[in-house]
Length: 205
Image (cartoon, rainbow, N blue to C red; front, side, top):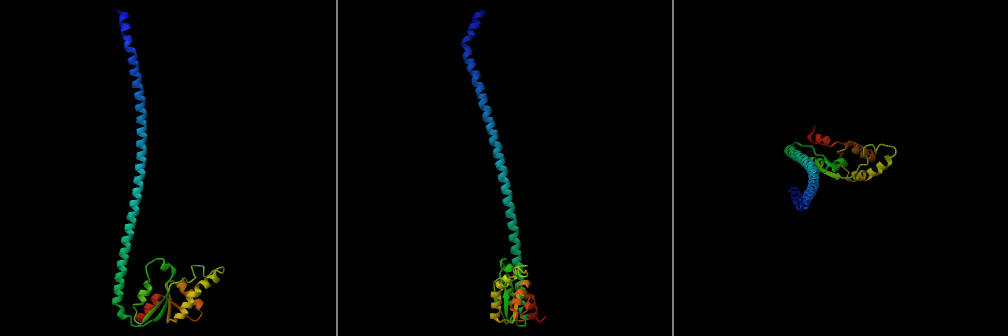
């Protein structure tokens, strides 16, 4: 009987072993797939974090641009009000200035705010503004250094020529150094007056 039971299990040994092997292999494949999925999830988390960081940076830039735009709009509105107020008072500008040669300073031109000095001076009755949009050659210390002074004078020469040809009653520049540099090159007694000085004269102050 015992022998029969032992012998009776023989037909089931091979299938059982095959099943166990299959389960073991399936377990290995499942573990490998699981690890791969975890790695992909970690990679996705890193990518998501990087994208979130980029989005945060873009939002910050947009907020800064929005703030700058609002500030620029407010400044423009303020300047418009000042201009309206000055135009309303333009009747008080009783002293004519005649012809004014105005050198538009380089640093003002690159600010791209427009020829505001010319606009203000044009509000003065009996005033003609001759605009000279050219470098004075001063450029900080460039116009006072021994090594570059001669070159600075060459750069200023076209501006000096235009001032002479205009034969103005006044010469002005938004840059005090540029104005003095040009007046020095003219060497004919011309004085570079500040634009506000001209407005003061126009008001008779």
